[in-house]
Amino acid sequence: MFDIFLDDAPALVVVLPLLISAIIAFMPSKIWPWIISIITLLLHLFLSLHLLKEISVSGLIIYEFGNWEPPWGISFKIDGVNIGLQLLFSIFVLVSTFYSRKIFLNEIDYRDSGKAYSLWLLAIGSLNGIILTNDIFNLFVFLEISALASISLIALGAGQNRKALLAAFNYLIIGAIGATFYVIGVGFAYAMTGTLNMNDLVIQLAQYSDGQLAIFAGMSFMLIGLMVKAAIFPVHIWLPPAYSYAPSAVSTLLAALATKTILYFFVRLLYEVFIIYPSYLSLFLDFVLYPLSLLAIFIGTVIAIYQDDIKKLLAFSSIAQIGYITLAFSLKDHSGVASGFVHIFNHALIKGGLFMAVGYFAILYKDRVTLNSLKGFGYKYPITSFALLICGLSLIGLPLTNGFISKLYLFQALYTNQMYFSIALVAVSSALAVVYFWKIVEQMWFSEIKFKSEKEDAYIYLPIWIVTISIIVFGIYSTPIIEFSNLSADYLISGYQN
Amino acid sequence: MINFIYFWNHFAFILLMVGGLFIIITSQNYLKKVVGLAIFQTAVFVFFVSLAKVLDGTAPILTKMANAYSNPLPHVLILTAIVVGVATSALGLALVLQIYKNYETIEEKEIESLELKSDK
Image (cartoon, rainbow over all chains, first blue to last red; front, side, top):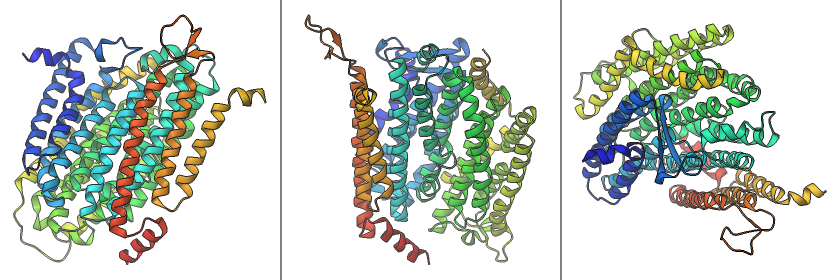
């Protein structure tokens, strides 16, 4: 009976959350929207595992919507590049949904919980669409659905702090400009080639082998639009307020997955489509993406040091971490792209864990978490604090955590490309990360006041610890992440070398 | 000069787009920013639709009178983009309304000064 559904698994992983989202929107109940979301996402995980099984046999799935053949119809593509991300996505949304219930109950009116989970599933479905789609216009639609859903979720934070409304509004304006730039680029590409399918686009672009100004203009528009959406420095300004004023559960989902999926599409566009103009690509990577990544790493880390608000600190550290990922992607070789994907996986876990722990502290403290308010939390709430400590150490890149694996592969990739300046800068920025993280640790464990430990909610610290344990496990046994990243890099770079 | 007449649709698109961006960047009023955004997005719709026009082309319906057909696909794409644009504007206006309820003003400068006061 299930077989009929399994054939449509690539479509269902996107359609199922979107469909359920519409159903639960007006449920007045406190708990049912959450239960239905969990069941949906369990099915989602099951479908993703099925896709993994299919991919390990066939290596490539092209799903044609309505059986229209690819250059004409919209298609989804699943191959070695995105199957790893799909799996991580599926697992992480399940964990964060499990975590979100108590957090949402504390931060928003319980009568809104149906609407909140409706938007939550809408964001999940559309972000998953970004991972799977093989059509450049379809991507725009998913980008906008995910942006509108996340903006509404961010605005839910207005119950705590009215600045959430301003953050959401800024995200709306800047995000819409970015998306519209992307569509202008799509327009140029369509005018020149008459196709929207990514595989067909490569074939059609090949006829302009010497390059055409219109195509380069279109490519630049698309890349800049995606850079805005992926919060690559200097077009990142919407991100820190949006992440820090959103409800904690929402920050977790967005910080861990939203920018990562867009970065994934960004690198796919670079190495799968624009690769046929190597001179343009290396111009963009060497003179735009590479310097911007270095600036992002340095400036993001330095600003994070001066933050008092912990969620803002983490948001600025995200800017720096996105810089690490784009630095790796700008290296144009297998080791670079692979280490970029390694960091996408690892950083999703690390930032997810950190935002989860800080979100719980915000509820315990009943206010925004600043450095001062953390005083003595290490003794007061030891279980969550210890998880925060491990995630933070992983963010710095200590051995036995997955952050170390990321740094190791990044250094290796930089070393093979003989970029000693970048190595030095990454090392310095890691050292500076110690500074801002140490400030948190100092407040939590080394303040003079001693507290007795208080009871913590197992529904909240369980998901936090699932993420934390996965951080340690992938720090010691990193093979799965390395395998998936190498697979992604194999697919992308093989195109580059031909 | 010939080029200008031949490509006038591109110039119209650029004019609308830059105008919209200008409104978004310079206006202090959040409502005006949403309107600017709508103009900016409309510019792209005009661009797409004008791309589809084939000289002497008619709507893609099979008749003996037609010499050439215009491309229908950009229209379909833009239908989707219009829906997205409407949703964006609607959400933007809803946010402006909420901002007004919370701050009792939608002027950027006044809100900034309010926030500065509350931070102190």
